[in-house]
Image (cartoon, rainbow, N blue to C red; front, side, top):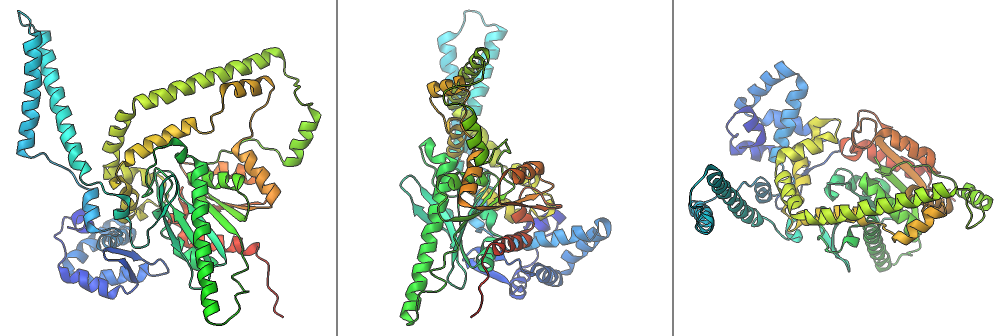
Amino acid sequence: MSTFSASLGLAHPHTSFRKRFLREAGDLRRVSSNRLFLRKEGVIDSIRSSAWSSMTTDVREPLVSVNSRGGSRMANTAIESHVGAIAPSIGTAIEEDLDYTPHLKIWEKMVVLLFSLSVCGVIFASTAPRQMNIYYSLGIVFVFLGCLGLMRLVLLEAHYMTKQRPEAELGDSESRFLDDERTCVHYKSLSPSTVPTRGVHLYHGFGANLSSWRDVQSQLSEALSACVTSHDTPAFGLTKRPRSLRDYSFEYSGCVGRKVCDTELQKNKALGNLNKASEGRSSQSALDANDGIYLVGHSMGALCVAHEAVNHPEGISGLVLVAPALIATKVMSKNLQNSTRSEVPSGKSDKGLVAKAVGVIREILASGVKLVSVFGLWLVQPFIVLSLRWAVRSRQFWERGVKSAFFKKDIVGRTVINSYRLPQLVMGWEWGIVRFVRARLTQGRRSLSSRIRDAWKNRSPPSLLQRLVNAVEERGIRVLIIHGEEDMLVPFINSEKLAKSIPNCKLISYADCGHIPHEEMPERFVEDLKGWISEQMPVEVAT
């Protein structure tokens, strides 16, 4: 029974409805044997009308009653839910595994019961008092119930593990995998009908994966005449979970994204040159006119973009920060930094001894707290893993989480939720999340002696924003910030402060939009990005 029919308490429409709908909705594009995607360019209205006309009377009449009670918007939402149920973005088998709820068989229940009785029997035989009392009896009862719960949990987890699969089995026809020295990266690459002259790479946010860009990646490729790539950050999506904590850093993810983009762009250009050479034409044209690389990062992905721009700014023409999780700290221009250094002689400070001592004590305490946090997190890893499993396996957990990032919550349907849930079927996904969190506590950690020395000399390492400002000033990189005004996760005012701090920066605000503008307003997102890039492109004069 489809989600739409089940919500109305109806029987599933007969099979002819499905066949007729798929035949009439001509803009359905099949990309694999069990994956269907809807094009966004003005097709949803025709699909809605086709679905309405194709519905049988028993399906259409309840919609009319819903419409009369709750308005046309409810009816339209119901129709779109029905469309989403008919055209899922993942296979039926995978969707069933996402909603899988295991149940113990009779023999497994007997094993749980016998195991618990055996444990209690052994304990009683070894510790039975001469005279029974209420406290001892309660203790045995608690042990019995604990063994029942623990053994049942172990068997249920064994059932869940049978549904987990290797990353490659969960990919679709557009999925590609890059064997890096440190992990196997899942990515997608889309190129325009012509040979691309620029590269664009997309970095997703926390808890998401590259499917977050599904509505804009192909549109950006054609609109910008670019090779547009995206990848899953380690710990998310279908990228293999590495074991080393250093492979979960934002620096590494930024570097991997740039590597994917460069590799695919060179492949496209080489193929274009080969085609032109085979046709006997000169290859000295748009192929040699490299318009540079544009890095686009959403939320956490903006941190990856910032690190890559700081560490490897060569060839980067522009940065696009979408609802960036980059904290707006106080920054100075490079000229002001140089003048400040010249005013204070090297190795000297106007700070008093008391203030220096306080700074040193603060660094020692901070180091102690971080050390305890890292050790405590390592100690409770198994409990965190179990908690993650219980939470992530719930569809309601994802619905609440994803909808909190959207202003227009009615567009969050089953297809969107499933795209976020898919990585939970990856083997070892939960340990990747734990390592990612541990990496945040150890990332950029310097020795205690260096921190004490800097505190004594009143020096502090520049923030990521300060280093980004320096790189943008030095290289002349342009920056675009796109942010929804109704964002409940990253305040819009943070982007306003960033736009004032970063040189060559433009801020575009989206009214009635939440934390994910490229999913809520994909058409406007593509147009704004295209317009911003065209502003800095030289105009060719015909001769």
